[in-house]
Image (cartoon, rainbow, N blue to C red; front, side, top):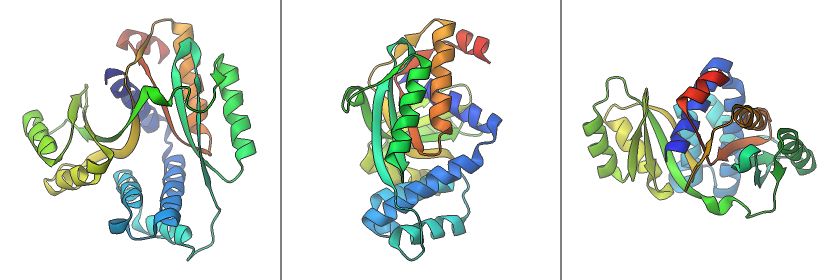
Length: 249
């Protein structure tokens, strides 16, 4: 799990530094809209929508934005019709990369994704080529400040969590997708604020990136993908040392 934890930390720091709040909101609104379109506008009866709303609240999205996105999904307001497409490929150093997209123009999206892979020295693969290397999990990030590790561990496990992973500034709580909402709700009821909360893909194993050139190319690929408006989430099965990360800063 260390590779995923490291990647989560990198993304979180970059998000704060690059002020990508607007892009984050756009991606969350797409997810809420399609969740409402597929399963209805009631979060209590639509697990996917409930998860999307939790993720939006963890990013402090205003309630009005959430409500409008739901109405667009249910057809009460006009909105674009999105299609979900999962792309799979290999980045620099043979790193497995999953790209979750939501688009109203799949020709544009696949062209962009293929270009980013090729530009980095990687390649876009066939469906199923790397998805088997990942497990779907709920991921909840909690600030370490003011939180007792033992108490958090007991509370999370009792609520249904599988594991709690710590890094320098946060705890990452992992759950099965079906237990995700209940764990988040129990944490919030206990006064623990979630910095991030979403369903994600966790690599079963990670590949250590050791060469600086490879690491730079990989980071550029992941940045380009995540900056694309059609891309919802990016997952990769790599790990990287703190020493190498410092040289990339």
